Amino acid sequence: MSANSNDNASTNPFKAADRQIAFSDYLNCLLAYKGLPTSLAAILEELLKYPVYVASEEPTQLLFLNMALKQQIAEQTGKTVKRVEQVVTKLVKAGMLIRVTPATYQINSDFFGFASVASLTGLKMEIDFKTNEFKATFEP
Image (cartoon, rainbow, N blue to C red; front, side):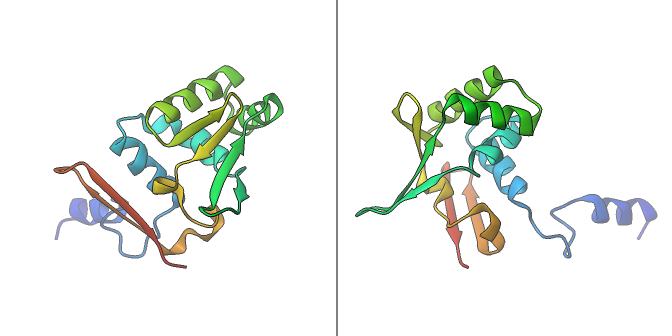
């Protein structure tokens, strides 16, 4: 084996057997699947840190996105509030967020139906690009 092929195997995240897939990898794949640029991942990841879990017949996750939270997300990601608002609009159009009221969004459980971002070690994602189907499962 040449040195070049060894280098490629060690830097290719899908070939490295010892590499653990990060949540950002999941977001990048999901954004690409939805036809959105992966540059939105930082804001999306930050948005997903603030849901409120609502216990009802069908438990749901709501995001109350007021100006203070938009400013905090902008600061955390190094973006502007305007950019955060643009990303939210794109996520709504892509069906990843569902607008409930002007400042309230439901997080689509088809994509983010797990307990918390911190507990994603059991995440499994399957994308079939031929049929355009997406399946994410979580096993704690």
